Image (cartoon, rainbow, N blue to C red; front, side, top):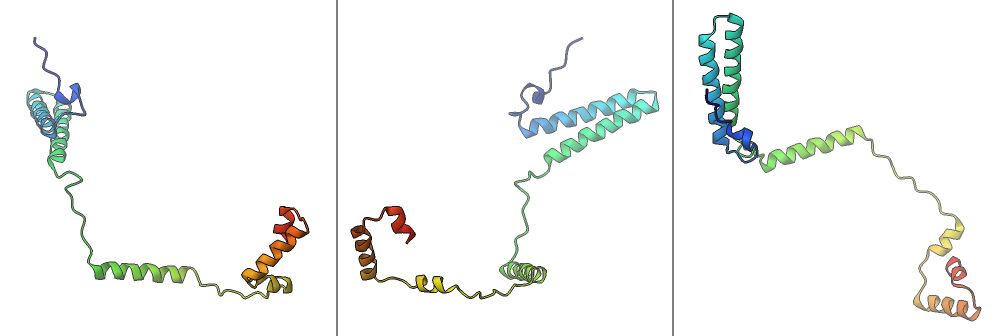
Length: 141
């Protein structure tokens, strides 16, 4: 008895074209139906018909559109703006806006907060150099 040729996808499952897989599953479905017709026992007959249905379903699934071919419904600009406004409204409901509290500044920070002019900076640097202060102390003051 000659051995049937192995299914193409069993040789190299990655490179087998989709058409060959579809043909293989349809051939298997036909084979299971023929075997089911020859069976006397009803449980075996039903089992083979079930296998045939599964193979046929695989063939139909593979023959259907690929995931890339399915198109996503496009939304209009108005629909997108409506969705965006709904999301923003829901976020506002979920998180109440906290009012920022103005804290008074300590007096020492108020004096140091003003910007120095270039002349004032230059005088400060010259004074630090004249007093031979280390760089770490210069930065701290």
